[in-house]
Length: 427
Ligand code: AMP
Ligand code: GLY
Image 1: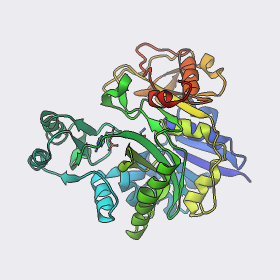
Image 2 (image 1 turned 180 degrees about the horizontal axis):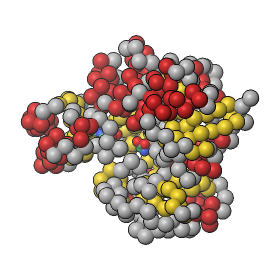
Image 3 (image 1 turned 135 degrees about the horizontal axis):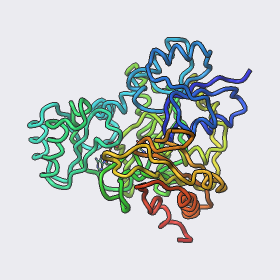
């Protein structure tokens, strides 16, 4: 009998996961809660959100493995509830998810265990935060400690900007309780890269490197978003850098979590800053990056299900991932106004034409079906992802498919992958 899988989430990352899991010969049936119209092609979508209902559903359907996509249910303890019900779960416990859910916890853990990270202090009082900023000077970074959908870190070039960031987070409470505590952190220069790893409580198996573009506008300008595009491999992440990141940062963190009674199981995403030989950890996420997941899974040749199971069961020893040597690149199409307010319900045209492009996937993020028509339903709407011989070719192919798709006010960056393309020999 094949496996029965329950996937939690309904964004672009979960569409990529559903697509990849559905290719496994080990799998008999996938449910996705809540899913989206793209995921419908690979899984039965069920409109369940509440934690108790999810646990009851998983028991009733005799799920063999639950795979939790987004950070919110992880930080609320969904994996603990499912494990208590006797189910295998891919995803960290609530205690381990604090690596993402509380930046002050994460920074304190790194400091306690001597893992290098930018100088920082945490504050619950705006005047105290401001006094610290004055002692440090600008540039400086002011962050909500809690979850803010990738928008809670404000890089401040001047003291005035830092003052306004503290006011927005702590006085105007723009991010609600996520801003109860702020972390004020030294500004780091360099190039960012994402290194994701499967972790089984003890062992760390890194994936291929990836890079994303967080800013809304071309040239990495404007406010940060959840991510406007991503690609793999990432030239900044040489094998030597990957080894160092595992040895100096990720493995020590995994050991630290185990030693403090919160062993980490699932995918651990390290947001790294690389400046020459200098390597620092900016942030941890406790789930696949979105959109990094989309190009990474298009490059993953191995069946993903044994890796998900091994993380859940503590049995990653001896496993290795087979990667497509080609590059993959994902361009996000977003609604007009994102990352601010945006309209919903606009009919999306050209999906069928884009789907005919070879080695290309149109992953759905914020979409829904309305009278048989796919319409926009979120800020980030689609992630057009293509494989190619090198990042430049993957980029050309992703944009070629993207040109088929339209709705009023659709916005996307025209330069996803520019750093990697500039480094390719043929560029
Ligand atoms: P975070 O949510 O901590 O990953 O921050 C989001 C983004 O803000 C990062 O991807 C960086 O682009 C930027 N950022 C965060 N912390 C720093 C820092 N200490 N120095 C420079 N840029 C940063
Ligand atoms: N793409 C960045 C993130 O998933 O947080």
